[in-house]
Amino acid sequence: MWLVPARPGASLDWASDAWLSALDTATAPRIAPPSAEPPCGQSTVAERVPTWGGVAGKKFPRAVVAHASEGDLRNHVASRGFEISGAASTSIGELYGQGYGFVSIEIETSGAISSPTLRVHDDAPAVLPLALTGSRATTTRLTAVVIAGGGATLSGAREVDPDLLSWGPAGSTYANERARILANGGGAIWLRESSSAQALFTGSPVPRGAPIPSVVSAYFRDATGQITPACEAAAKAAAAEAGVVGRACPAGALARLPGGVECVPDPGAIDPSKLTCGSGVDDLALALAGAAPRSVHVSRLSGIVPRGSLGFEWTIHTPSAAVSPVGFAGRFEACPPPATSPPSNGSISPSSPSDDEEGGGGHVLRETGCMGSATTVVYETGEEAVVADEGCSGGTTGTTTTAGEDGCGGDTTGSSSGSSSDDDDSDGWDTADDDDGDSSDDACSSKKSSSSSSSSSSGSSSGWDEPDMSPQSTGAPIEPSKTSKKKSGKQSMKKVRGSSPVSRYAMLFVAIVLPLRRRLRWRELRF
Image (cartoon, rainbow, N blue to C red; front, side):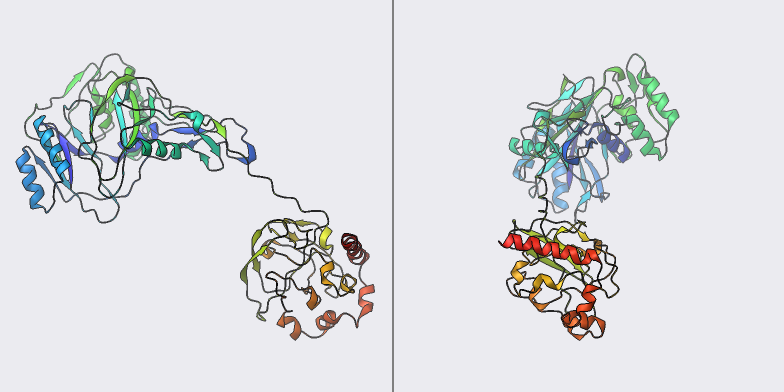
């Protein structure tokens, strides 16, 4: 149950959600990066800071009841099965003593819900009535928008220092800084996020970002569901007139508290009807009644009520200095360290073929660590791996991170792009590389991770040539694929290799010399 204090004679209505939405849009801070040329490819576009709080699905109340007396309110609360805490009971008594009445609004609160926008129109002083606002379960986030003749503030309010804000790949740190300040304040601090005379009718430009629309433009558009140039023009013309806006009276269709002075419409110097746009779209006229539009500011403040406590009656003070809704972060975040380039003699070994004869795909997580630890997700198609003919010095491009075991490995990104015109589906690795029987000579070939989904290669490959060249990811050798053992014909002969030297001599020059050159480099590394 929601207990809302209101003055005698107050009129209550459900207002259009477009009104609060337009105020939120026009007053929310926008933060831009320190300059138009941020480092590291960071965004140059200004951000709109998220609203302090959230919005849930709307749910209308079961009942709305006005209570002129304190006894009536307490009896109603008890009859509905609710209890009033000691602190809330004290606040209720104090408010009735100050001449207030109450309206009780009962809402089913299963799950996260949001009430409709409630508009209370009365002759209360300029205060934020938060004495009964709070929650036992969570901290209550508050956003107050004040429309007054000059900038508005509250006792103890402060502003976010832009010099403390940084700009990085995720935007600014404004939201984090706001949360930190309010949490440290424990409910005794408010933040003035903006206070502008342009918010209602003009809007504000945003460097390197979309301009902030005026309240009148956004409100009329959202409330009517269409762009309304005639309504906007009439309202802006009225706002330029001298004098104050006459009295507009709400319908009071939801509830009306007994007592008080009945509202009587008065056109005044500026007819409030000029600030409306059809039936029911009258929030702007009601907000400006009795005010001079030329001097009106719209101020936004954010605060909290800590969990397990109730708020206070906060007196609104005017005038106060303007606060632009547009700000700049004070500095850029440091760029991440550049990726380590692969050494020129690094080698990429082909992937071990899958043991699954059907060739099913899968994801493999490998950790390798010649120069630090690199973790890569590899997508295996189940087909035989495609590798570069050149090996260590072959050109590679792509997204895979790899690391060798014996000191020459680095981070190599790549999908192999080797080529061979050999018609016998050569695997691209020359047997001379391992004729000494020592697989450790191939210092870069003991580890490999790749992303085969992003690789492209002409020709095909049979994967690992010899059992003693299998990669080792956990210290234990990986046996040759069962699939390769079952193959016959030309592929089987290719695996044996020693019985068919003629095919080696038939390879293209590039497929012979480059592996030999690579072997010489490995020899030099060993000695």
